Length: 98
Length: 457
Image: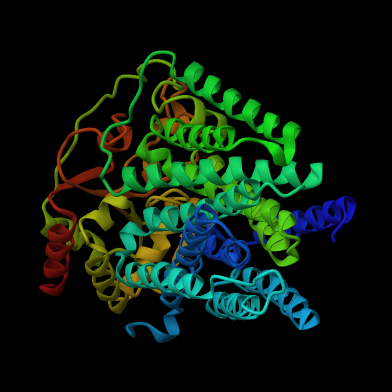
């Protein structure tokens, strides 16, 4: 069990980490980065699987099913579009190549 | 097994942060997303063996297959110009998933500590708003919802709904696990409505800021639900995204000169006072052949692309023109305003798609001092971001917004469809300047003519 204050420390450190990591990103990467961070919160898939995994009643299973479905969409979609965008960034050394 | 699962979650958290860090440079960005992807696959796989999971494996795999498959299919197909709304959609799905997790835990009615209940309710509220709000944002950018819905006392009604939702949330926290399903249903229904109502009045131009905000909110919701499920990977990844997204939202709002409160609580055009000064002078047209000659014999050309270029699908032609000029020894640079395209960095993606290397592309801060030394500034599909009124007309609605100083170049060529004002409806003083020539026509066709005229030389 993660106790209240330990959780608070985790939240605090994670918040500073996120702020620091992003603060040095050039504007040209803002869109892929927003998409990339969108992918990272796709980790909600893990939680959705756990929630569905211990759902008992029909209603819980229905909600759980949608949770996993949506979360998988978040993770997979976020990855695919981010990867597609980042793949296109190249320097003039390889110009003309697609 | 539990040790192995926990170690995998830890590795996933490390990979996420490392991946985001790698994404901060264009050279390593691609590796960054791949590392983060490995983390995600690892975390997902070990979760099948998680101690709390004891049923519904078939449903689980089915849901992953359908959700993941649909997202894969759509993500591979979406055009680069449509990227913002796709991000909004995937983001909303994450918010909905976080809210659904909270719903299950609350519906279960098992005793929870007050801290857990508070975070569950908070995550549910934020996640649900991000879910329905993102759906509306998607609809607006996709053109499914065309009008910004506004009615009298809208802010007051929205505030009332939000307060009611929060009050029911407090009731759920107070009563705890014995809360009836009725109140839970009302809570989620109201939260959904709040997300819809707060996003409906926001105009398309402000949507990137809103999408970014929802992205940050989803991150927070995921982090909070991570605590509810006692899952450190979710807590860390969620809060990292929450704070990163908040910073990103602030950067975007600043670049657009629109405080976040203005975006959310007022409508574009209302904020600025008055009409703006009368424009003097007239627009002077130019033929493509003359414009081509002007650029071919220049030493330095700076191209200012706007979203209009992407709409006209002219970016490939623009790159062809650039290569032609560079072969003649002309220095060519691209000047990108932070909000060119539909969100910061979107224009870079569109140019990258056409094959323009990123070292020809410059930010506002890097390029503005270079305009006075440029022989030609070619403005294509951009309008407000090169309007000098932002610099010298205090009455203009866009006064104070950072702009590209294209007007300081020796000659300015503007490719534009017609004579009317841009989509913000603000007259552009640049178009009337003495050193500006207007090249009227479709972006792609006109750049094609420029190319043809240079080739003939």
